Amino acid sequence: MFRFTTLFVFFAISINAYSNTKILFLGLDGLGANYLSRDNAPEIYNIMKESAYSLNMQNTLPAWSATNWFSMFSSTATNVHTIKGNIQRFPKNAPPTFLEYARSQNSSFTALSLHSWRNLNDIIGKGSHIKFDLLKNDDVVLEQLLQTIKNDQLADFTFAYFQGVDQAGHNNLWGSKKYFRALKELDNKIGLIVKALKNKKIYNNIYLALSADHGGVKMFKLRSKFEHGGDRKDVRAIPFVIRGPGIRTGEIKEETRIFDIMPTFAFAQGYRKVPESWLGRVIDSAFKDVQVTYPNRILEMAISTTMKIKFQNKRGKNFDVFTPVSISRKRGYFPLGDVIVVGKNESIKKVVMAPLEPGLTAHPIGFEKVLNNRKSALNPYNLTIFNPIGPFGYICPGEVLVPKITTFQPKRTNYICIHHSYLQKVNSKRIWNSWGQMQAKYGFSFWSPIENAKSKFPLRTFFSRRHKRDMGLDRGYQINESKVILSN
Image 1 (tube, one colour):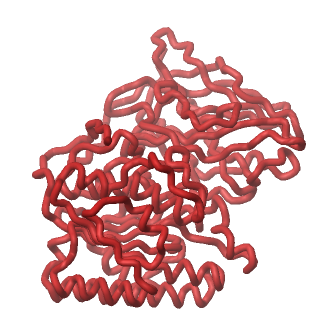
Image 2: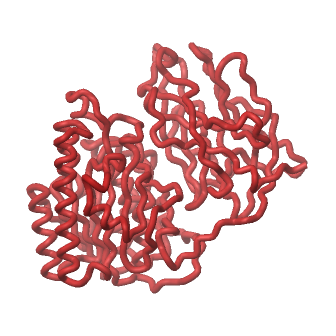
Image 3: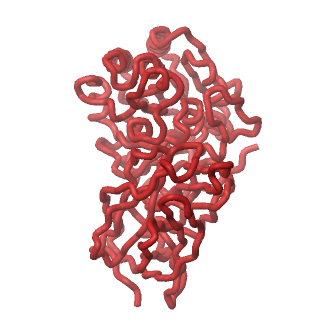
């Protein structure tokens, strides 16, 4: 039984529920956004020119296919659905996928999946309204999809999955000549799909979307058989492209994640409620008729010099993690993440905090667990790190550390996210890594934004990565000082 909650977004219009507009979604396994270019994927770039798109959508960890396809279809993070690998059994009480949810809202909703990977039968969802065609390879998937288009048999939601690029990455390394050859073959297939839609004169009447689950990095061949390189940008950044009725054209500049895709599809088809378990947000700026506004009010912030200690690491190069505490006379100020101090001689002088101000700031809507470090004979510490997820258009610039191994998320109302226009992107630097310091399951590192030394609004936040020397997608921000003031 599904539980639903209203999805609050700022809209200027309403769309009839349960739209008959069809979605054709192309799943491109193993296609990292960093490998795309106009030269090696001209057909994809032709679609992007008339689409809303992002080449910096972030997937979830661990970067396995089953983990990310299910995170996408169920709009949840790994710590919710617990699928951490391709051979793991799917939980009986898994969160509802988009296809299951849509059917619960619309009894006539139909879905078709054309794929050559058996795991997708479980990942996509269950129900008699879903037709699965388990096919031999990508060529047969293409042939079947073209025939489906020709015969006017597209379902309300049609999913066509292509795995050739992923296979080339595993067999020949990501970024190799054979990888790019597979990408070119995939791009040609997409060109044939577009041509078929135009021949049937439905290209402008349906939503055409594409995305991936993960990318990969160049590494020695044996290792490439078993993993996608950990928490690196070439692995974490995936493309997302959507075109169709009412879709804007241009780059999506807000922060997006893999679990935002299905809420966006739900909105495109007219659904206005989502399952309570869903973590994703509708990508508002992808739609022409959704009014996307940038607040122009001044945000009043406060400085905290009082810190509550959360964790101390005294092995090797030590670090301490604190939570800022509000000492403003007005109270009601919240940290934008935990803060970190590295080294024995460094101390925290002050940290900025923000109030709950509708339209400017908001509490996180949930958390994604990004890392844990389990106690062992060589490692005396247990810790878990969560990444707060803000409403669409808001950014939570810092992560939250819990000094134990846990799947229970931190309390949302203890932290605050801020509208992205009140932050400025800055480079980050690595301030600590686990090499020789802690015997973690994953080599990991802490990174912090390189803030202006004279800043009146220091964040002192940090983010973590499951790789010692790679920042993945840089999450470094500093306060836009032209839009904020300090409270007395």
